[in-house]
Image (tube, rainbow, N blue to C red; front, side, top):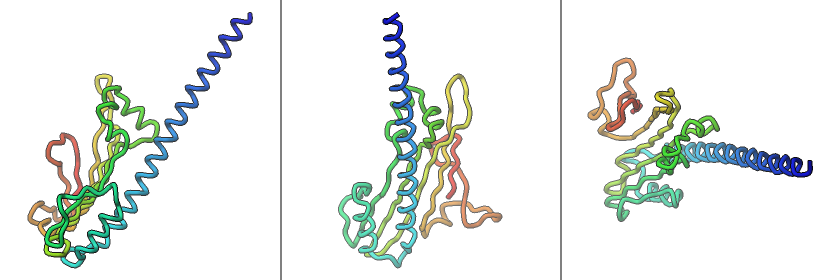
Length: 192
């Protein structure tokens, strides 16, 4: 009788630990998603005021310094030429091989996670801004096939690029943007 109670207590303790661990995992996914969304909003707010041929090298350099560890400089940044990318991604994207190996993407999504990456590219030449791109990718679950959940990527980008009209064929019904497929991605849609 005593051993049955002891086993019941151990099982109850294990169950509580498992439930607590699961709740902590779900909470950490939710917190990371919230932090990443707020950070993306802040980055867009910082990038939006930049204007082609008006924003200066010092404006751009201040932006790169403000984002610190998230800034990846493209070589030496001088007034003649400067470029960098500000960006990050969530746990599931940074550790995609691990998540895919365990086939846990669907569970990650059920816990409120949305695999995502946010990036801003900035280029200056001759002391002024010549190109500015803001890029967001969010994965969403689509369907289960052959026992595995397959997701698709929703990709959006906003650019200040003087060559935009030359690069993309714009439809008359929506002239300010173009919808297409990024290279190397089957089933992806990209809004330019």
